[in-house]
Length: 93
Image (tube, rainbow, N blue to C red; front, side, top):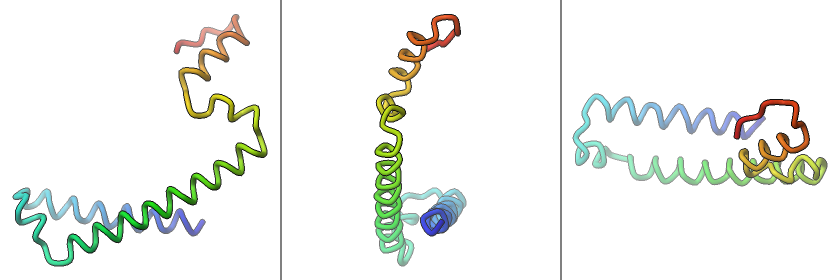
């Protein structure tokens, strides 16, 4: 839950930056806004924290459900496997 709130904050900050940039799309001006670089660095660090937490969470689920994780990283492989197991179902990869 904490990570979801963190991500929402990151998303809100990013959208604000993009809205401000859309109003004035000059790249030099957009990059030279005071505090912009520090804000982007902070958002990047927070995103890395969210990604790490998400990876750890998914690892715990993969350990709890190992058979489901066999093809979790590849949707096309999963669809192909399902088509092999369930030949009567029309699964398009």
